[in-house]
Length: 353
Ligand SMILES: NC(=O)C1=CN([C@@H]2O[C@H](COP(=O)(O)OP(=O)(O)OC[C@H]3O[C@@H](n4cnc5c(N)ncnc54)[C@H](O)[C@@H]3O)[C@@H](O)[C@H]2O)C=CC1
Ligand SMILES: O=C([O-])CC(=O)C(=O)O
Image (cartoon, rainbow, N blue to C red; front, side, top):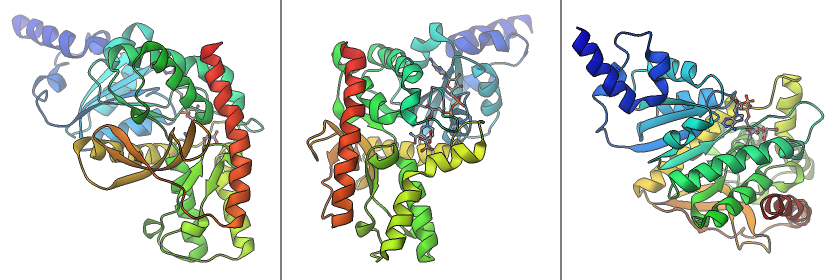
């Protein structure tokens, strides 16, 4: 028995280094590590996995059949979340990593890294008010990615996305690992909200509705293209005004409803998984995977812009043009670009200063 326990402890320490402390107290602790190493699928890390988004995101990624290994990293509570999620009887092997000394182990060998690390808004704050704290967090995490998994596709959720994506790009450039196709700011929640709110107005099932949302991920930079809704639909001027405002302020609606307890977490985890699943299907080589994301772009004069992208084996392999805009959308686009330009520059300067 003693010999068996020693063997199990050895395997455990090798496969689950960060869990070993937590596992000291469990006799059969490495059972979850023993037999699954060969299952096909992708290796995915979530950085900020113990947070409001991170936890439901981890749960949903554990349910995703495309995931074979799931690494959960946070500066707090990673062992508890890992123990909990690892009991789910789905295919992915789950390993937890706690704190900066374990960041490199968390990242090594990953195909996809999803980043919801950082502080959320409270009522009265803008996303840009999070810059001072989240910019440094994103920089540190991206330095780890550049070192340990430079070919991973990165899904960046931490706000302000309009600045954190340029920060990540600068970190990767500095490290000599930047591949613009592999860095994607997650704007999926804007699309998810737009589909929901438009479906309500049209009296349709939201699953039948597709609304392109372009620009960025804050206030007026969130630009729904209601003239391109599928199925083709027309809206009164009042409906356009109502829908545009509601989509642009969807985040604030949740922040105010949560009254100091944070921002959107559940709808964000759902959106992050929808987007990550699309990235994994692209990596697998599926044809025709198209979603909106905030990426390096030549669609406008700005270096980054959200629009529809085709996801493939190398990440965002094709960035689509905006298509025909109506007058209302053209005015919106000019407003969006003005704010976006400043947010992008702020992110770039944070690293270049
Ligand atoms: N892109 C989007 O559409 C959305 C973005 N967000 C953003 O996502 C971020 C996270 O939101 P929540 O999960 O609600 O916040 P939260 O505070 O509940 O969780 C954040 C987690 O990040 C962890 N963390 C902090 N510093 C870290 C570091 N250096 N390394 C690893 N983990 C670290 C915390 O320990 C915590 O567990 C916020 O910046 C928020 O504004 C939120 C909703 C939508
Ligand atoms: O509003 C926030 O701060 C969080 C967020 O980005 C969203 O819900 O769209």
